[in-house]
Structure formats: C-alpha cells, structure tokens
Image (cartoon, rainbow, N blue to C red):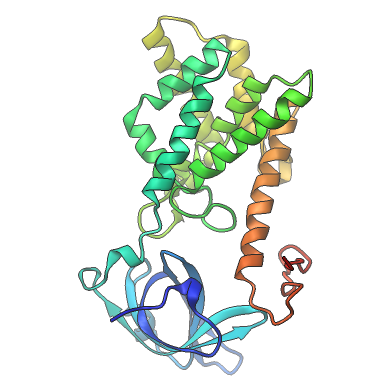
Length: 320
C-alpha cells in the first residue's frame, strides 16, 4: 500500500498507513480517561498523534522504535498538524519498506565529508592539520561521524546532522575569523571541528535518536575532551612528534566553553577570542536552523506569521 510522506500530509485528510513509532506515552485526562500521545516518524519528518479512550494493553502492544499501522485523520491544533488515531496495530519490520523510514542521506554525508577534508587539509598550522588528518584517517571514526546526529530534537536532529552542522560552522569560522586581526582562524576552525564530536558517543543514531547511558551520565563536552586526548596520543605515536601543550589546552578550552554560559552546561566561560567567537557562531547556526524548522513546520492560516511558540516566546515572520 502506498503511503503519504509526513511532510506531505495536510489538514483534514484520512490516514491509513504505516509509521515508525519514535515515542509513546500513556497519559490520563482530567476525567480520568487514558489516552496515547505518540510521536510518529518517517524519513521526511515527525508528527504528533493521539488516540483517545485506550487501555494499558494498547500502550504495551506497541514498541518505541518499532512500526505501527495507524488509521485516523489529520487536524491542525495551535498551528501544528497532528493525527487523531482511531486504530493502531503493531507491524513487523520485515513487513515495511525501510526506505520510507531511513533518514540518512549517504550522498549528502559524502559531500559534507569532502568539504571537511578540504578544510582540514587547508589549515596552515602543521599540528592542527596533522591532528585533523590523523583523525580523518581513522575509518571507524569517519563511519561514526557520517551518521551521527547533532541533537535528539531541535537543530540538525537527524543521522548525518552532526557532520552538516560541523562543516557549516567551520565554514562560518573561516569567513569570520580573518576579519579580526587577533583571532587565530586555524584554531577557531579546528575548534568548530572539535566542539560537538562527543555527540558521536552521547547520542545513539541507530534506530530512534536517544541519549546513550554514557551520554546521560557524562555528556558530550567531557567525552569530547577525552576524545581529543586520545587523538593527540595517537598523533604523537604516528608522527613521533610532541603535540604542543599550550595548543592542547586551548583546544580543550574551546570544547568546554562552547555553550557560552555555566547554566547552559559550559564548565568554563569562553575566555579566549577564539572561544568567544566559536560560541556565538555555534549558537547562531543552531538558532537559525532551529527557527527555520519551526517556520517550515508551521501550518497557520495567517500567511505572514507562525503560531506563537512558548519555547522561544514569540511568533516568527514567515512571509517569503
């Protein structure tokens, strides 16, 4: 049976097709009745679905990360499209076309990797260039980087998203850095390469995007510093050269300070020009990408403005 991709669904249409179950919650309404709050997914995106008047068995019969066949109807609620389901049933993986649900774009990832290699090869600092080339010579690391996500939600939250975010940020650094005499553009660019690498181990990109146990307990900033230390040791073994301690400390600072504020998870505030620049460029890329997603997902009838988003405290202008 043919299916309509999630990004092509519109208001007030019947739904009778298979989805990947990204998340499930069993909730109770004010009257004491139980309902399912679901997050459905395919390769084009996600959509919220609800099913009223359910029992515990309805929740237990479907598996998070598995597949379901849902019947119901779409509706717009507070500017966002959702599905009201009347029937659901679990579907075995061998009964679905996995191409409908695979979010990883190998061609786009290969292109981004080429851009990354070119920027690393173009660094003038011999230690940074050598360290980056050593890192990218590790086939296991490259394979992980190509499919890693930059987040579970919000910006670049898809397999390959970390690589795209990293390359975009490095390109921004190479554009901005030369405009400020005291900024070391090579150091800034390499900091962009490093800043989120810990997310390779913080977030699982296989199946549904979710935090790993190590990600929950340690976090990508600490993991990233550990990855840097291991990479420097490997570089020194391969090159028979000692990596400069001062340069290592500056790279560590770029990783631990890139969130910008202590309350946002940075163990240290940015204290070098490169760290300050990296934080603001990283935040800009993440915010623009996240806000663009909100605009593209909005279905309000008002052609100029999105619905109000409490998470950002505003509506967004969306007129082209």
